[in-house]
Length: 114
Image 1 (cartoon, rainbow, N blue to C red):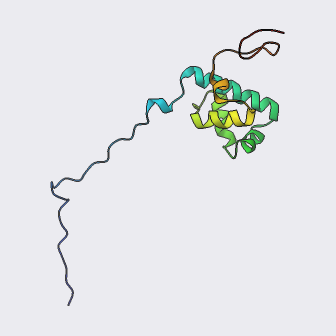
Image 2: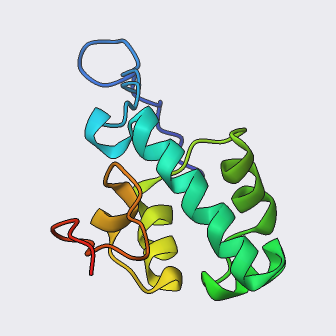
């Protein structure tokens, strides 16, 4: 003999709970200026290494199409991509995201020449 139990209705209230929409925090996005600086850094890394495939390998397998999309302005970058770019460029994240270009003949901290 088989015992068949009726299925309960949906919980206590009778309605199915809905999933809340997921929103990333605004602090996890790059600002437009930071995105522009990341694009410049990626183009500089590509100029040094030669191809997007080489940049991809140096960054630990980030897809070459993603890197090219960020560098061309199609995709936005992410803070994780800034960190990987800083590691490949042997510099700091602050250096990549800070405003202004430092001339080669000047001190990067105080701006003094000579």
